[in-house]
Image (cartoon, rainbow, N blue to C red; front, side, top):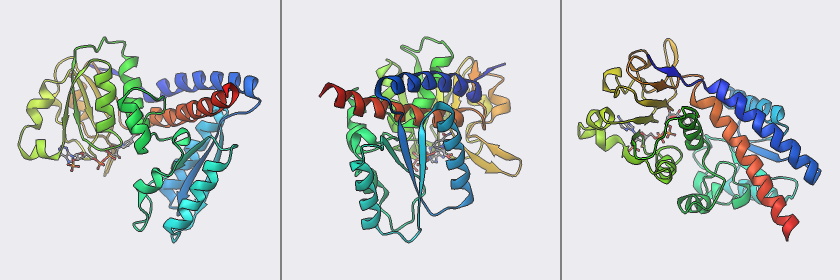
Length: 290
Ligand code: NDP
């Protein structure tokens, strides 16, 4: 029976570490990190998520501002808002809440965010730096997955990892972080499934990470005995929220497994806050040493 990787407990430890860091930074710079979350529209789901982010930020000592913009905002107006926050020395980090309306080109807006204020680590400059191991600002969900893997205490060097899902915010950046730790990585995507080869890859995973968004895509029988299973997926079904892995069956074979909810999600929010602290350090230490 697998050991549960409790995201809420891990998040609590990470928050304690970040609070201590923020207190030290406050002592040195007489300032705390300040982040803005730019949200277009105000649907209930997004507001609830922003509220929970705000609570976590405040618990750590990070100043959090929610900037709510109208759904009919133009690309030009949104770009001007980003430029305003880029130029404001009191703002250390910027995130753009998803989803954005269809008429907004998300990637080009994300790339306008100053690289040292890019809290989600997703602009092209930060992705490039991550590839070269030259930045501490790394996409939040892949970092959360790495924290969960680290929390097992298992030596992962030389192990086989299989990532199912190859998006730009989860699967692809995660593959880089795992390779950096000398893990052998296979990334599966829709074509792997279409070719009927998903099962054979999943079956040899010492570390399995699934980030697709399809309820119970991975049957428990596919899990290698003793594997570390990290389920990133979030799917709303009749019984509530479930992941991409058939949890009940998988936990009988895995050594470690994340639940959904309460696994990757709470740690991802902490990684956003960690990036806010890193952004603050990049900006203030640079100013101090200039
Ligand atoms: P995307 O839709 O951007 O990417 C999904 C990936 O899965 C794509 O690479 C897609 O391939 C692949 N895929 C789709 N169907 C299959 C299949 N049948 N077999 C194998 N691969 C498949 O999603 P995200 O990466 O944004 O998110 C993935 C899931 O993770 C979602 O449920 C999301 O809600 C959740 N999530 C959770 C977070 C957390 O903090 N817990 C944070 C971020 C996301 P292709 O592109 O070729 O179609």
